[in-house]
Length: 433
Image (cartoon, rainbow, N blue to C red):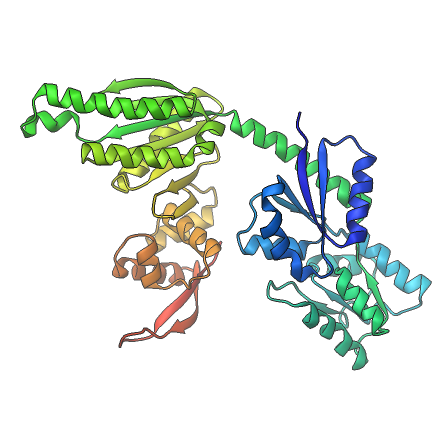
């Protein structure tokens, strides 16, 4: 089996440790070392080397979050800094160097991890200083955070998770320690990569059912077309669909006039996503009718067909402007030629959320669409932006947002002044629960 190429992004010393751990194990992976001198170089490294890499591994959570927030990677991991790593550094600080653990500054690590570690060691943490991760943080801002606290005598020692920050603090003769990944954290990352690779292979081999409906083709006879004309149009549609079926190595069947089904695998469907959109466009142009395409994935033919039927229903609700897919987790993926895409769930087992949505008069699909838009976009959520994204009236979008706010599922975080005359628009954030 071909080895997966892992792009390891981080400082030189951690990269060497990753390569050494891999040499000592039997993982079917190949390391591509992508070294930086400062974490700020991460974005450019990912952009420049994406074609060479199958999977990304970042030596710190901060750099992983930086590229994830910008949507630059799909398949990525980071080396986790465990409570054991933090405990080891704290013990080194106290027993080997004699510093007080109550007066320490930290950067870019989890506040919960920090507090839990201090509690486990029965150390007072009220005087500790933490700079949490924010994607806009610069190298100099992190260095200044530590140096200013040290110069103001608010801390006696600094702990950083970033190699370049540690080096500069050392140059400035600020007592500092580095929180670095361990062999254990590297082995855990390799385990996750391998297991998720196996899961990905399993998903690609899942059964896929494509349901295609050229709406109202059967009823065209009543609008002046002869049976021969309808049959000829049906055959032309069939020819286009057969061409797509060959591309995805599928099997084809026709259920009736204008109704077609294809069986294939998830891997083939996802590898030919653009061909699916081209199929939708060709059928719409040929028939001048609404065409709805639904794709269902499942471990059995029954579950895949059930999901395909649900997906086709969602496509019909959009008047055939999208291809809808439903997977085994109940997530709906809407794909269109307009460079827009939605991924959202159509069900929830959270009883409190269900009750609040019911009181707000908003269904779970709409709520999950709003969460998805919020996660994928830097655009503020206003009634007008929601109306545009979800193709509804501003009045309806306003009703939805007001209902969610009233029942604690949305919060107003600001005001936006419109370009034309009018009242300021409320800016919302959607709360996940």
